[in-house]
Image (cartoon, rainbow, N blue to C red; front, side, top):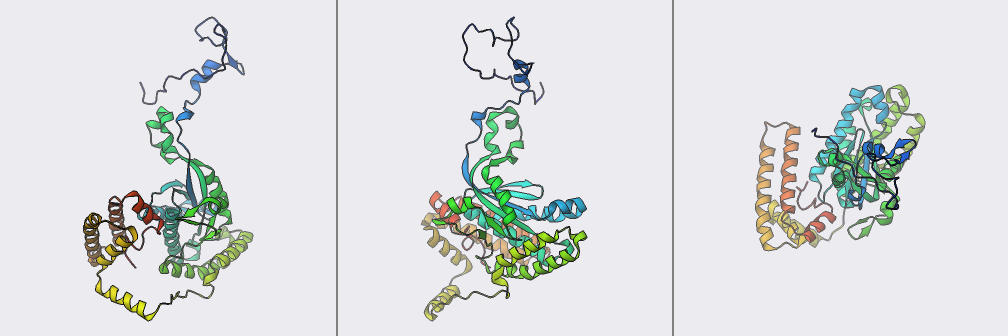
Length: 395
C-alpha cells in the first residue's frame, strides 16, 4: 500500500431518519442512493478531502508581525536574480534575530516577507529591533540602485498554528507541511496595516493598542520606534533619514530603474520625515542627569567589579535568584566570556565568521540560563526587554 493511500472514510454525518428509510442505505443494496447535483453522495464522500475539524488546533491570542520589502514584486519582475539578494538577506536577518530572542517566536516565511508569531509583545519588539537595525545597516552602505526598504505592522488576536492541527488528518501527521501553515485574523490585519507603516517603520494595529501589553503597561503608540532602547540603534536610525531622502530623490529621477511610482514616493517621504523626525538635526546623545555622588558610586562599582561579576549581580537583582541557581549560572557565563575572548583574538576568522560564532555562543548561553529559571523568573526576563542588559554582552 502506498504511503499516501487515503484512510477509509467514515460515512458523512446526515440528518436523522427513520430506521427503515431506504434513502441512506449503502450503494451495495437495492435501495435508492442519495445524490447531489446528480452525483452519488457516496462517491462524493470518497473523493472529498478528509479532515476531522474537531481535531484542529485551539485558537490562542498571539501577536503577529508582518515584515516585507517594499516594492519586491516590481523588483522580481525586473530582475529576479537581483531581487533575490535583498529578499534572502531579510530572511537571514530574521533567523539571526530569532536566535537572540527570548520568549519563543515562530517564523513563517512568505517569499518577499515574513510572519512572526509570539505570545509576548516584548519578544516581537526585540526581534523587529534586531532585524530593522540589520537591514538599516545594509541600506546605509549600498548604492541607491542596490537599496531596498523594509517596513512592517503588528496585530493581536486569535491564531491557530498548523502544527497544532495535524491530528485531524493522516496526511498532515506524516509530513511537515502543516508546520508552515498559520491561520487567524491578525495575519490579515498585520498584512493590510503594513501599508500605513513608514519606510523602515512599524505600524501598530488597533488590536494591539486595544488589548496588547508590555508587562503591566498597555501599548498606545500607532508607530513603534525600534531604536529607543539602544544608542547604537539610535545612531543607525539617525543616519537613515538623510539616506532615505537621497534614495527618494534618486528614485524620482530614475523611475525606470527604480520602478518606484512618483505618487508613492511623495507619500513615503512624508511618512519617513514624521517617523524619523527626532533625527532631523542629526543624532544627539541623550544625557541623563545624575548627582555627583550617584555617578561616583557607579564609577566605583564599575571599577571594582569584573564583567562577569556585574552580569551575576544584574541577574541576582532582576530575577531574585537563589544561591543554587547562581552556582549553576556562573560557569555558563564564565565559559561564554572565555569563548568570546577567544573569538575576538582569533585573527584567522573574517568579520562575518566571527560575528556568527559570537551570536551562536551568546544564543547558547541564553538558552542554558533560561533552562535554570522557574516560570516566574523566565517571564520577568522576557518582560524586562529580553534581558539584553543581563544575559547579553554590554556594548
